[in-house]
Image 1 (cartoon, rainbow, N blue to C red):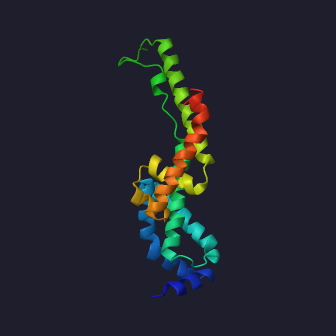
Image 2: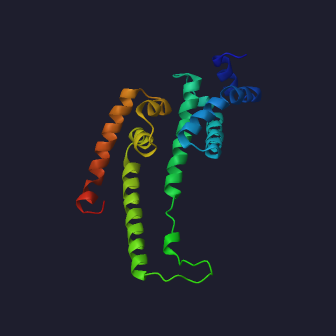
Image 3: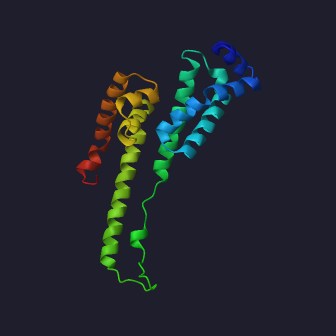
Length: 196
């Protein structure tokens, strides 16, 4: 069994057996971290793969300022948070309620076009508001954005967020407070204009 420093040294030398040992020794832990964030096994597996690719490509930059496990945790947590952000951008509202309806005999049911246009207007306004808020969140510095996403979008509690982001609880509270205040300031012009 290799010590952590020996494992890191061999990883930096691109020793294939060491990479296998890293995956075997830390893969389950990293998968559980990803799973806690994305809450979907397939996405967690993808995050794990992305994280290991990142580890393999950047192991030479590992300076040892933190433990290997902490470094791995940060990489997989960031991969998971990026996946969540990407999925949020890709989510779309269903248009099924705006399409023609048919009865059990295949006959088209009458619909009020006024109702359809009203529903479409609500859907467009909702999408516009989501885009405005998303753009404002994207303008926040990464450290604040990550805390805001973990706490307010993903719904993790303070302790979970601290663990995921590898920071202490007080840092989560401070960053969240500052992120919310900054977000409010960024959204104030559109709130005043009545868009949000």
